[in-house]
Length: 196
Image (cartoon, rainbow, N blue to C red; front, side, top):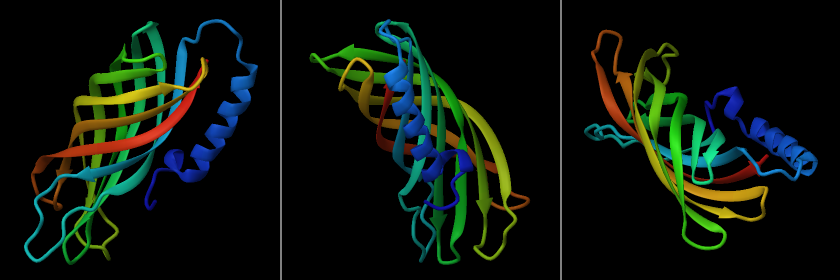
């Protein structure tokens, strides 16, 4: 997992999980109104594959999400989004990171299983490095719709496991004087968390 923001590093996710485990035992018996989740996501930045080059690989990143229940089937969620990508023989690299807020609906399909739908907005910053040996990068920010869906398995009243897929758009400026161009970013992930 290269070039991850410190908040999304493996060590930070592990520490967050330990704090979650401790706070889970201390949680009172009242109905949970907050849901905290951490997961690993595989993401890809869509961009045309250059001639004689390679397209962006699927990259691994960490994500954190915090949701507040508005009703038994609706929640307002704040989440982080991040992915890296590389292209071509000169190893041009791009990184997209940011956060979003979304309304999440859940539809029970079995006793402990629910389908999830997500719709909101994400503010994403895209940075681009045209060549591997050049540290400078161009940056662009874009606020666009954020959509997703998934499946949640409620292991207990407090603990859950989720699988999800998300979609957003981000701007990249592919060179110092270039115009910004919008690129689709996709994530697929799995993780879990605590209700409190």
